[in-house]
Image (cartoon, rainbow, N blue to C red; front, top):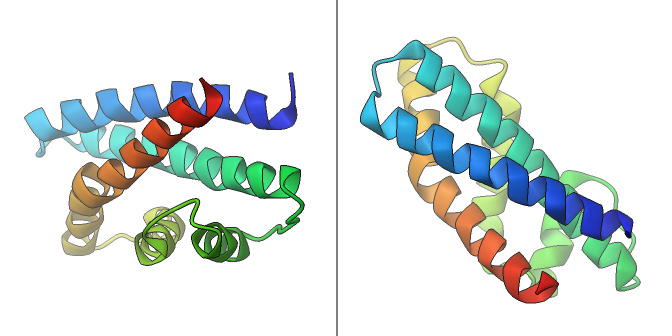
Length: 132
């Protein structure tokens, strides 16, 4: 199994967990444990998503290493459609462990459970077509 295939498998498992966390959060947005579950599931899923992109680009002769570089190159090669959302996703991933103001946390949670989740769903669907 190649590194890319292994990462895709890991991403798929992480995305399933993210889906469950998003659904639980949507049903009980006041529960702090649901906040924590959603944030952690998102962090893991996003981390794997950009690393899948990195490995995919490397297998196609484009070695890039840093998350922003990977996102920009994936956008330039039409692997992902909305580079800005991916940059926003990266920024949110970086902010989740350093943000303590509930109003900002709630904004991040809302984006994770809607815009970012939908973007990762598109990515998951692309991987299903690519991998299957």
